[in-house]
Length: 389
Image (cartoon, rainbow, N blue to C red; front, side, top):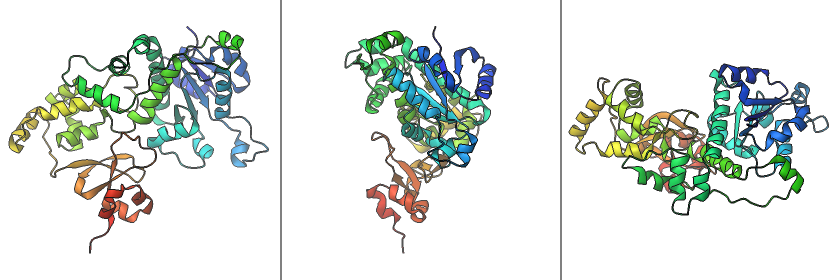
């Protein structure tokens, strides 16, 4: 097999050492920036490109156009010129993302940074606990899995494509009564279609030399869709905060029960998402499956509480003491662990929200004192920001 992960870095030792501790050292073909010609032949057949965003220390201290040299993003553009659109997913890592951007990095909004950079993902090398190598391996694994199972997606007809995507990429269970609900939700999130082989304007000799796999364009598109739309927002996949909201229990109570030998933990285990990138940025559950669990509970309050109490036992049940709970987002519209009544919040979005995503919820009190946040509040909720009295 050709090189799995192409890694370009002027100081690769730390990340490669982390790869070895994860027993993944042999998956990396690392090259110093001057050795790009050696990396070229494997560039088109790799599952992932990883580029370090490096700059000379003097350039970071005294940036100027006259002394600026190449960096990870410029090398990425060189690889794009070589391989064209039929390239694998690409990731930029660096200890100096802040200086490259000129601002602090909000890790929860890296999907936006990646889109601005024109790559599929970005990560600081200094992520604690080895998360950066975990993210790299998750992306490479996802690309490899999609490449190996692309035939059903390539051959699927218009009506079969989304169900096949759910089966092949998302590993949607077949023996659940909420399967059709998931397929409808996935279709509503507008997954990328599997592309037919397209034209390539590079010279024939170069195209033959690289042995480009045309399916990698679609592989990259599906991974980018997952990273930039599906995972950052509540979609057909949800985090434990939204599980707690749908069941009407406190988040701490739900987390304790999920980590204990309870009926809830057994039920949630069957609802857990296990498709591509399932190891990426925390556990998620099928929203339609959680809805089915919630609808299986009695409607009457006392009977419902008794059913929940049995489901959570022996963990003491802590129900929310208010109606219409929502997950609260901060001023950057990143969800927090706070759950509040909808009556205390307003809906907000920004230009990065996918059109199919539900708006975030922010506290009315916060939006009243933060003009930038207030401008993100939906027009129909603006009247709630007018202070009473």
